[in-house]
Length: 282
Image (cartoon, rainbow, N blue to C red; front, side, top):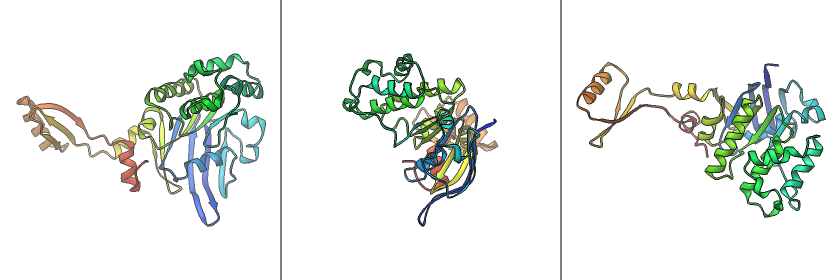
């Protein structure tokens, strides 16, 4: 199986409103695939369609080689992990007891609990009642819950939205390690830096339609002006074209030791999204 996810001509409507409009893409087995878009773009609807929480209006879907008719089976659920806006914990139980329930559900040894708590940096809180945890702590426990049965494919909907930079970096390391071991990750995010760091490929979703799909590197190169941004020691900031005349200007600045810093134009994914759609990733 080359692709973990295959989507062709997918549509989803709610009454007269189209949430997903004739979308087609594939997610390769073993890659981190990012779906980027602002709130309301259709990212969460896409995950719900790919996991069987919503029924498509039209088009074709295959996830882990299975059609939507198999999405409610134990065989399908054993292969996927989900962290979404509908993920929940038992608030009156401890962190440990919550994860123990899911170990039993997936026939995992309870030793798996400590493994996961270490990965998400929550081992010191395992005896705490979930209701007393902060939103960020709960988010990390939900991630542990999604990964506890070693799924082959993980769907993550804004997994670091409630986390501080330190814990965000920790979660990124967990996801990268997981991916290096062969797990496919489908990531919904509006965080352009997160997508740049984690994703092998990204797709831009805007008003339910795909606008772009490529690697972050290819997108940044394609939308670059390739000009040089130069700051001199005197404080001048120059934009110099990447051509023969620009080369002569840079050579002159270098000859006189004027260049403090220099880099080529490399737009961020957020800047590219704004250029493509006219809307910021917020």
